[in-house]
Image (cartoon, rainbow, N blue to C red; front, side):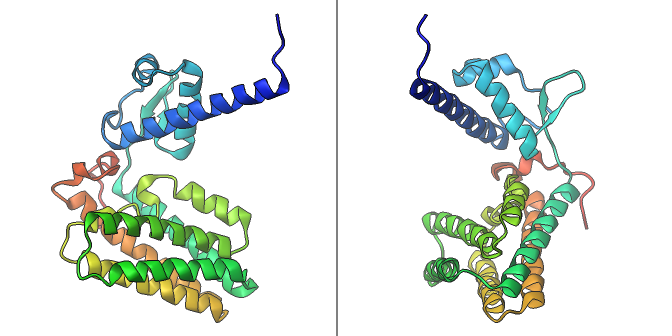
Length: 258
């Protein structure tokens, strides 16, 4: 029997990795869309049939989603879709604010790479252009979400710490703990643009603090910034149409924070 060459082995490895990523993304979509309800046990064979891939990438994808926190392991083996209390989500958002606060404080104290700072300013300029409109349509709102995610990622880069960047990626991996996790709640509200303008002002202020080497100020701004996400969380779980918001259906409606 012919032995695969190094290139063939590499191709096989990359193909397998691609299958895992595709399965992971599709499973995440199914969970957030409610196709796999909170608390439900994952039937591995049905997932294999549904996605049309082998069991190996499905198992790897399930393991990754468990590491992300969307799934939990069961005592007898297998996985179930995790549910969260409102306090769980609030704590995750607070943790992100704490880590971002540390990142910007280090950026201010250590100094930053000019190229990354310039990219952050350019990102904020693009957001400013979006917010010049009196009202935001769906396309503009979607564009804001992309730019907002980019800006928060750049804050991690400004710290110059690969460790903090990894931690920010980890804590933001759950949809409701990401910087734009609950921004979608504002999309159809009369206050949508006003809320985003407040958030944008905080973005500008934190860059100003970093450039002026004001570490404590920069950290305080990011901690305050996370409070906007906390407010959006409360609005999301109290929204009569909360089931239409991705991921919110995983949040249990009892034991709410006040």
